[in-house]
Image 1 (cartoon, rainbow, N blue to C red):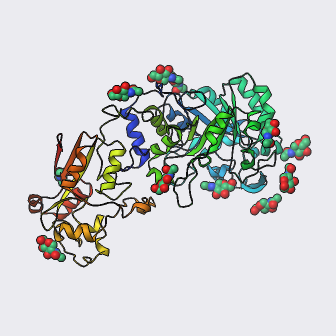
Image 2: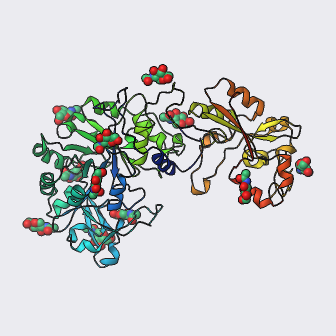
Image 3: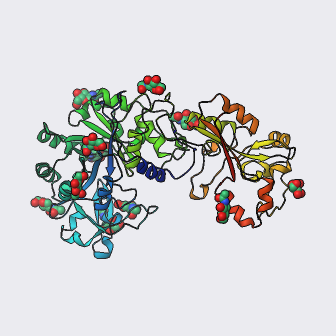
Length: 530
Ligand SMILES: *[C@@H]1O[C@H](CO)[C@@H](O)[C@H](O)[C@H]1NC(C)=O
Ligand SMILES: *[C@@H]1O[C@H](CO)[C@@H](O)[C@H](O)[C@H]1NC(C)=O
Ligand SMILES: *[C@@H]1O[C@H](CO)[C@@H](O)[C@H](O)[C@H]1NC(C)=O
Ligand SMILES: *[C@@H]1O[C@H](CO)[C@@H](O)[C@H](O)[C@H]1NC(C)=O
Ligand SMILES: *[C@@H]1O[C@H](CO)[C@@H](O)[C@H](O)[C@H]1NC(C)=O
Ligand SMILES: *[C@@H]1O[C@H](CO)[C@@H](O)[C@H](O)[C@H]1NC(C)=O
Ligand SMILES: *[C@@H]1O[C@H](CO)[C@@H](O)[C@H](O)[C@H]1NC(C)=O
Ligand SMILES: *[C@@H]1O[C@H](CO)[C@@H](O)[C@H](O)[C@H]1NC(C)=O
Ligand SMILES: *[C@@H]1O[C@H](CO)[C@@H](O)[C@H](O)[C@H]1NC(C)=O
Ligand SMILES: *[C@@H]1O[C@H](CO)[C@@H](O)[C@H](O)[C@H]1NC(C)=O
Ligand SMILES: CC(=O)N[C@H]1CO[C@H](CO)[C@@H](O)[C@@H]1O
């Protein structure tokens, strides 16, 4: 499943960008093998507040960017709030303090209201007219994302529908009960809106709201979608938990044509971040005649180790797993599901190029297993790499071994072995101390050391799968070539990072260090015939 996991580890969303620009012009799939969605069509990509992974959620730039960086059938999602004068605007949060700079224009207007039974303090759209809000600007609400694009105006739903290019529109009505308490009618807003603009989907977590408008929207193109929240939360109009409501999808079908669920309703994740077996909800929903959409996808929040931080791998688990496909995904980064659907689903594995560009592994699938081990190379082959790579180092007794670093402290447990004190300082290689491959014999390495998974992003808390941190076996160059012989590869790459010559010729150790940390190979060879 993890198509590219470990095969060159870059932040997943950046890869998404690169791939898009290589592949502009693809269309969402019209494959020969049918999708396992309810309709048999490709799953929908729903851009939550536009391209909100990069730009402030619901800003004009976030919505406009979707048409540049997503498949052309992407649906735009707007989370509707109502102003004091009854205008619908797109804002991701009922509390404006969370997503705008309102505190600077209206510092005195903080209030508290009960929202679904919870006393909530902040700034609320019910206290401001659309004119008041013209002085308020959107800001990035997730602090790990860039604030560079803060400062765009709040967008009325009308303007989104009429002036921003899109192929479909999804309005989410999260807080009908709250607006009703404030004498504002979401129902009236919506019924007048559908006369002015085309609304493809309306979702809400409130049963009474959807069942109330369902008769009015029957025989229109607007689909009603019931949104499930966390299973323990009570649905405000039935006073039943969402977990309870899930047990009767026939009831949901009486007023909705689909459901939207948190993604963990489908693939639950354990408390230590491993993916548990999938539930039966997708097939259950389809059996009940309901479409099912999955929410909460974002490239910078990939929690389960099973995905190796590869958001593409995550989408493929929901749309191309051989058992079911959701009917759509709600995402902050619409480019990635666009790729998953348009480029990486239903690939013909037996065709020579697997339908994709040449993929060269980076020390095997080193995001999943310790660098250059048998397990890392096997995973790279399983993931569809075309070329696997061996950085060659030399042992004391002259054997050639695949090892990502000449310094054993980088990728083995040498510091916890009987050789832990055999440090040397070799300025041509490293300004600090190291224990080098050429200081131990092959036998000493294989018998006494274990591989150690690399952790290039551990400082940003992206820790690699602890289950495999010392797994796998070291491989000599000869083991590597034997392994590669019968595999469906187009070649191997052998890199010689440090030769006698380079050590002699590099006089400035910093210069070498810079090259080696970028893994630039000084001599490479692609062998077509293994
Ligand atoms: C998307 O692009 C494809 C070809 O590039 C085109 O055939 C299709 O009509 C477009 N769809 C929409 C909704 O614009
Ligand atoms: C958003 O608002 C809620 C209260 O509605 C608050 O608990 C939360 O901390 C806020 N988040 C941010 C990012 O401001
Ligand atoms: C809600 O919280 C605010 C601030 O914490 C407090 O002043 C107010 O009295 C509370 N309202 C209710 C109804 O509990
Ligand atoms: C919408 O897209 C069409 C065709 O791609 C283009 O001609 C038009 O200028 C776009 N409109 C806006 C408001 O961007
Ligand atoms: C809503 O309207 C009712 C009846 O007209 C009134 O009693 C109530 O105070 C209003 N509530 C708000 C929040 O304006
Ligand atoms: C919801 O259920 C709780 C406890 O079961 C009860 O106290 C409350 O009155 C109910 N609310 C409504 C609106 O039925
Ligand atoms: C499920 O909902 C349907 C339709 O509302 C109803 O007829 C049926 O009795 C419900 N089943 C259960 C087990 O509650
Ligand atoms: C996730 O990874 C764990 C550990 O490798 C494995 O036991 C589990 O089966 C995987 N989950 C799925 C759904 O493949
Ligand atoms: C997959 O590719 C193989 C080899 O090119 C070809 O023979 C086969 O027909 C393809 N299968 C499909 C379903 O396209
Ligand atoms: C490691 O090997 C180098 C080169 O042969 C040698 O100079 C150094 O003393 C050795 N270090 C140890 C601790 O054996
Ligand atoms: C092979 C290679 O890329 N060598 C580079 C090492 O770094 C120096 C200085 O940064 C470059 O000039 C070399 O081209």
